[in-house]
Image (cartoon, rainbow, N blue to C red; front, side, top):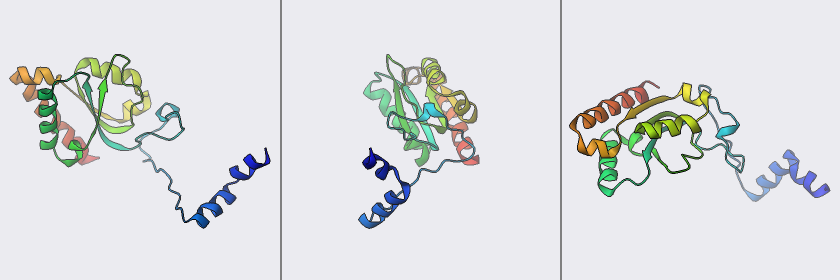
Length: 160
């Protein structure tokens, strides 16, 4: 029991880290995004706080659909191209990183995002809903809606 108390002492921990040459880092969050306990993983660390953009796609997309998705995201700039991509499976999304904006492909994925994302984060984020990648391949109007959605996303990222 005394060993646990000695490890838990923050001054001793800081001294030991300094002796070992380890620089402790702290996760900083922006004041605009509220983070609650549902944004923590099992280890207690905050997952992806203040990520710029997250892309939510349906599970089981074909290579052609993923290629189209990658090309469209790269055409929208480096911030959107490097966005985290989550697939909605049978169990939903699971842990969702907190981000300033979400690009959601399809209404089913939007429902899963609304189910797994805390309300405070959802109200603070900019969410863009576009058609599924399969619909974008098949329908020219869906492709136009994708480009309009990406334009709105770029505009929202530029202002924040």
